[in-house]
Image (cartoon, rainbow, N blue to C red):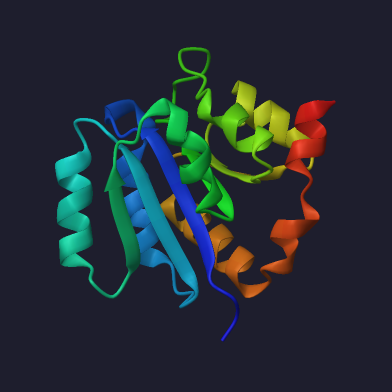
Amino acid sequence: MAKEVVFQFFGNIGRLQGIDNLLQAISLVTAKNAAFIFIGGGVMVPSLEKFIKDNPEKNIKFLGPIPLEQKNIGLALCDVALISLEAGMLGLGVPSKCYFSLAAGKPILAAVDAESEIGLMLKEFPVGWRCDPTSPEQLANLVDNICASPKQVNEKKPREVFLQ
């Protein structure tokens, strides 16, 4: 079996973060080596906890919130940072966690609008992948593709781009 690839969502697990899309995508992922970690808190935590309980075959962990001074420990737990926003959030929200992830050298898998700040960054710089925030199928396909060839995670150079 291929090496486990850990995808991590951290921060606000709220209504505007596209949590339903993420959970639908995880339910469609077929890669056996995909693992998911959620760190944070918010109004969508009960939905996340129910999903984890209802899908024991999926490798998902919820760690709850961690203090800001321990974010580096949380970031060290993953191979790929998951970032998502609901469709239509263009200009209304920019997940600052994206920059934490880049600084930590973690590539980004983003389910965001193409013209959002993160969408434009991913188009310009080879630091990750982007899909439509309304397509759990696209997101699941990207996860499966990344898991099928985990070496591509190391081909991204997010820290170098961040420093530039």
